[in-house]
Structure formats: C-alpha cells, structure tokens
Image (cartoon, rainbow, N blue to C red; front, side, top):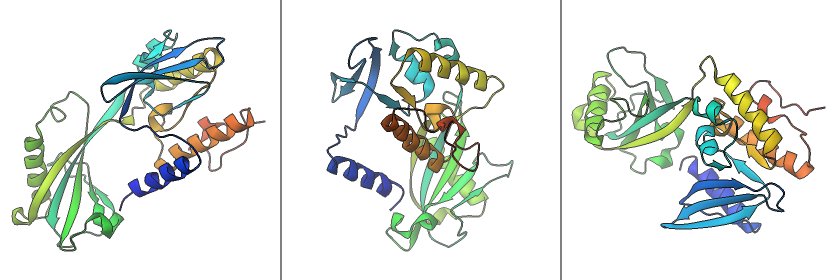
Length: 264
C-alpha cells in the first residue's frame, strides 16, 4: 500500500516505546536560550492554538532556509541560508483503465513536445495501491519553481495538461481516463548551484559552534540531494552520535562514499 506503510510502522513502534507523536503541527519559532538546562524552546501551532515545549536536543529535517529564518536570536548564517535554492514539484495523478502499457515503476520522458518529466506507475510499485484490478494510476510529474506559470496553474488546467500529454505519449486514450488529482510538493529538490556548498559550510560552522544540540538530517535538512535510504541513514546515525555523546559517524559523508565511515 505504498511507502506510507513503513512510516505507520515506525510511528507505532515509537509510541509503543513511550514516544509521543504530534502530527498536523506547524513549528513557527525556535528560541535558543544559552545556559539553560533545556536550551531550546519550540513554539508551534496545533488546531489554531500556539503551544510550546522545551528540549535539550533538536533534530531537524526541515528545509535549512525555513529552519534558520525561524530561529531566535537570528544566527549569523541567515544570509547564507536565504541564498539556498529549491526546485519544486507537481504530481498529476490520473486514474486510467489499465491497458498494461508499461510495467516499469517509472519512466523518464525526454520528448520536447510535452512538459511532463517523469511518469510513475503506482501499480508497479504495489498492486495494492490500485484496489480495482481493471484500473491503474499514473503519476505525471512536472518539475517547476514555486511561483512560475506551471506552479500557478489551476488544478483543472493541470489536469487538462496531463490528460492531453498522456494521450500524446500513447500511454492512454481519452476514454480510459476515469479521474485525477493534483499534488504540489514544495522544495522537492535542493538546488546545487555554484555557491551552495559555501553556503552550507557557513551554516554548518555557525550552528555547530553556536547552537549545540541542533542536528540537521535528511534531504532538505542538509541540503543534500539524497535518496530516501540515504536521508534515513543520516537520521539513524545522528541518533547514534547523540546516544554516544560524540561524533562517531560523519553523517555529512553519507551518499559521498560507498560506506559510512566512523570518524577518528
């Protein structure tokens, strides 16, 4: 039933060990109080109400630019964080009659006559993701920037675009298309421009020297174009470091080497 099953299991295991999981909450501010026993104060919004909690340690997978902009007092690396760029992403999911046109999990599209960049075949990931055996679900993926003409298009316009392109590519006929929906994903890809490494190094140095107890993990949390397994490993080894009370693993080398080395 898709990768969400994995995270459902993680949540259940975490709660069975006494952990608390709060979903649907928006973190709006992080206050660092140097010298306090629990130096971090996290302010968040839940069901329209502002709440807060104190903690000794924070692990963040939020986009660095957003994280830094919400910290108080403002870090010296604010300017570097604001210069980090992101690529955004739209998926138009179309429910179609299954004609078994292709069996791959996804295919990349290189036809200059269409805007779609990749098409997911969700049934090939798992038949349970499409409960009706007569149907399939294709996810047409569009790479864009928030605020550009594609991102600002209405859902109906995007559905019309996806339908026309799936037909043009020969993967479905108009009478095959049963339904569809649009999903917009902010900051799907950290952008590797000429300056991003310098910006990330400046951010790391500032946080490590002046904000102990804050750890960055994941694709957007570290501004690294990681796959899901690499992103998860950065979190796993960060927790190992916290428990060991040392930098046993260099999580910033994940996805740079075949193995994840321990530091000296």
